[in-house]
Structures are given as C-alpha cells and as structure tokens.
Length: 450
Ligand code: PLP
Image (cartoon, rainbow, N blue to C red; front, side, top):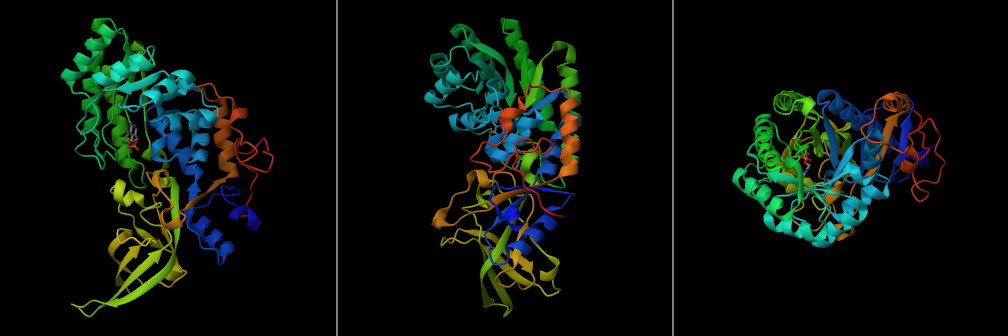
C-alpha cells in the first residue's frame, strides 16, 4: 500500500473524497523520513472546474492554455473531458498531439511565432493561429498560406495581475489595416481574439473587448471575410475564493455574447483559460530543512528564518513571475499561540530565493511540514532544478465514486469534439499496471485505502 502513495506520478483513487490537507497528512505519515516536496493534486477539483465552466458559459468552449501548467495528467484529463487546447509553441503542440488530441482542437495562440514553428503547425494540421502585426501576416503567408487566422486585439488589462497588452494586440485602427492587408495577400482571417490579462477580476474588460471584437468582425465581414470565431482568451480567476468573480465574469460574458453574437449567427466562441482550471487543484507540501534564530537589533525580539525544500527557482517561481504571494499553512500540531516574525526561504544558495520576507508564525522545527494552497498556476511549468534541487512532484488523487459519476455524465453528454478514449490511455512507460475499465481511462491502477 505504501508503494502506491510514494510512487512518482501515481494517481491515487480513493474510496471516498479527501481534502488536500488529509491527503498530504496521509502521505507524510507514510513517508516518515522522506521529505521531498510534493503536490497534492485534486483531480476532482479540475473536473468540477470544467463542469462549472460548461454550466456557467455553455456557449464558450474552453481551450486550456497549457503554458499555465503542462502536467501531462491535467492535459489528459481535460482532453478526456472534451476541452480544446491553447498552445504557444511547437513543443506545446507536440505535447498535446502526442497524447492523441487532434489538430482541430488546438489553437496556436501566440501572436509572434518562430517561422519553423509555423511550418511545423502546417505539417501537423494546426491551422488556427493568432497574429497581431503585419510582419507576422507575411511570415504566416510564407510558412502556412492556408492558415486560419485569428486577429488578436489589444485590451484594457489594467485590472489584471499579469498584463499583456504592452506586448500583444492590435488597436482598432491597426486591426482594420491588418484585415485590409490580409485581403491583399489573399489570407483567410476567421475571427478575433483578445486576452484581458491574467488574473482578471473585473468583467468590464471582457465586455469592452467583446464589443470591440464585434466591430472588427463586422469590418472583416463587410470586406468579404467570413468571421466565424470569437476567442475570449484567458484571464479567468482560479484560486479558491474567486468563485464569485468567475460567476460575475461569466454572467457578463453570456449577456454580451448573446447581445452581440446571437446564437443564430453561428459564430463559434472559445476561450483560453489557464489558471482557472488548475490554480486551486494543486496544494504544495514543503518541509522545513533548516532554521536560524536571530535577535532583532532594534527591538530585541526573537525572529526566525526558515529554509524549506522548494523555492523561487522551483515551484515558487510564481512569486517572481506571477506576482503571487503564497500563504503558508500549518497542520494543527504546529499551531501554537506564540508567534514570531519569520521569513521563509527556498533551498538554493541564492539570496533572491525568498518566499516570504516577513510573516507571523509559531516556532517551527526542522522536519515540520508547511503546505501552500492555490499552487497550480504558473508554478511547475516554469520551475527549474537550480543548484540540483528538485521541486514539488505532483501526486494525484480523486475518489472513485466521483470519477464514476463524472465519467458516466461525460459519456452521455454531447461532446464538442470526438474523443477516442483508447488513445488517452497511459502508454507503457507511464504505467506498469493495466487499466481497469471502470477506472480513470488514462490512469494507472493505483488504489489507496481511505
Ligand atoms: N492565452 C494566452 C495567449 C496567454 O498568453 C495566456 C497566459 O499567458 C493564457 C491564454 C492563459 O491565461 P490565464 O492563465 O490567465 O487564463
């Protein structure tokens, strides 16, 4: 039984639902002295996000942005559930297609692409791709002349955590000129995309962007293009506690698309959510590997520095790149009423490797575990093993009962894409066990006791 929980990349199908905290505690008990960092990945949470998406915005087909977290099991799960994919490079396209996802489920959503990658997209049949400038149009003409182009518009992303509009997107005038140019070059533009910035908390940016898209698509249609795709981009919040913001955005999006893109026009509407799907599903467990007691020279108070075994070069790169402020959580046994000003540092030899500069914590001991919620977005996809140090490895869990009901629901629900379940099974390098029919179709046969 122990082996199932310890095995890297194992998926633990539990008899009843677990919280991430329970799952982590169970694993820690089993691991004893083995203290490498790990993620508890709640696959139910990802399924629930998908169900919430489909019920909140039934007209919008999600294309998961794998840059956010390219964990192969997340891709497989979402592929199985019928999502499409937003890929940003040859590598991402290959990763998704190697799992058996067909080219028509992929949008190559990077407005500035390397020529050889455009040629690769052409070779493998990925035709839908974004652009936002004339040079890109000329490049695509040379490398993939029958590409189906999606013109990316600039947005007001001033309320987002991570902004993109300083780098990508055509303004309204430029967009019209690009449509003129595409006509001159005999290129096909099929629609418009935008991105309201990652971690967008207001619906207004989406409403304004959809209205702008409508104007640009009207312009294109007048020139003789058939504008039939609207791509809402990413930006939808995904942390636990942001459900209300998501609901507000979804309801504004629904109202605006119904007004400007009524169903009878048959415009296909997609989006490229990344963090929405994965942020809350990943909880990172880290171990205190060293500590230092200090006296504050000004106040004389005792302060502590803690060193844990994952840091900003690893899973916590979100602190640097994603403006994330992770909050440490402790198990009850570590909680006492005394608290001290503390800082939390990663394991590398770099002074930049700081996760929390100042926080009140009870006194921790070497060997204590700290866990961190909402660690699924822009964490492992950008992590490196600087100083030869590993970062958190994902360990997945899901209750069998839940999966059975989800699978039944998705088998009878009309799929937006055809899915051949057999290609989503794990290949022999991923899994030494056979897969049972009533289990996750792509997962190894790993059971844990409750
Ligand atoms: N689409 C594009 C083109 C992006 O650049 C990104 C993020 O960088 C996303 C989608 C995903 O955004 P989010 O994770 O905020 O949903």
